[in-house]
Length: 77
Image (cartoon, rainbow, N blue to C red; front, side):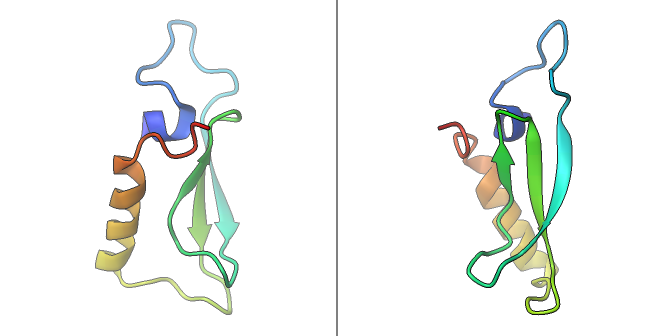
C-alpha cells in the first residue's frame, strides 16, 4: 500500500512531505470502487458509497482492493 499511495518502496529517512493521508471520495455513476492514489500528494483515495451507488459485497470489495494494491505501478505516471 505504501508504494501504491506514495510511489516509494520504503519510508525516506526524513519522512514524507506531505505526510500520507486517506481521503474518502464519493463514487460517481461511471466509476467503480477501485481505490486510486495521488502519489504527488501522498493520498490514498478510497471510494465511499452514495445514494445512487451502494457498497459491493465484502468479497467483491476486497477483490477490487487486491487488484489495485497488487498493481503498485498504478498512479505512478
